[in-house]
Length: 390
Image (cartoon, rainbow, N blue to C red):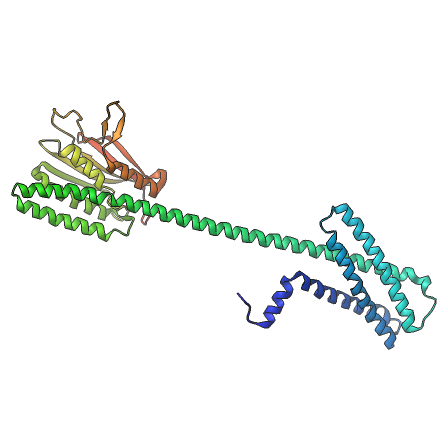
């Protein structure tokens, strides 16, 4: 993004461009040396003539010029081994500081007319060595600072890229999981709709038109609820209980007085969020493997209670009362020919996958015998008043 203010643009150029920093610091440094020389030599010795002042300025200009080859040498040997670089730097400082001392002494004698000053050359040389050593130390210090600053900026850029990549990956995983959850949920409606329409067809074929009409009416209400909550991965437990009872009312039309329903919800649990229509496959299993296979029908009980930090919502059935049916229960699991357990269909598998996607290891399906005589299938999930994070 370009900087519109010219002053800010120039400031940004100076502070971000190493070459601009070099020239600014060099000019300020040699100007400072001229001021120091003026206040430490010209004023105490009353050297106010123009020749002395001009010499003061010109010696700083000579020093600035001699710094250029020193900068070039330092840049060339910057990547060399440290001991060799130190030797080259010291030799360079000694050669250039000696050259500067001799040049400014010659210039001083030429401009002021003074003679016989070579005996004081040591007094000119040692300050020159100090100045050039200071310049070399500052150069290396600034150079290291710039390198550290660039490394820091590169780390910040890398960290920013990693965070953006992690965010994109998280968003992609979240979108994939949400899509998977929606697909798992969409498996339920065709399955349930198929069973219900078969039941309606059976009622119509036996001329039970009023019962078929009531079933279709309740079916339309159930599907409307499903569509209205379609964009929500979770719903309040109150709503889930309402949908479960609506589904069982549809099934009552099939079984008449053979199906009885009991419900129980712990106090204050109505606002807890649960996956939408999560109870439906549990209810379908209970109806299919207990109520439908029992001539006397049976009972389905829906219970919601809190167990520590978890919510436990269970669907129980009274099992199969007929001795001719060997399974003796709702058939939460059957036995295959080799004796291993297998799921009765997509219902429980669907519920397990939805809970795992939403809650990880804290969301699971538990199966155990029920006090009603059949099977108790329960879903366990962490209690929360809002939708679980994806």
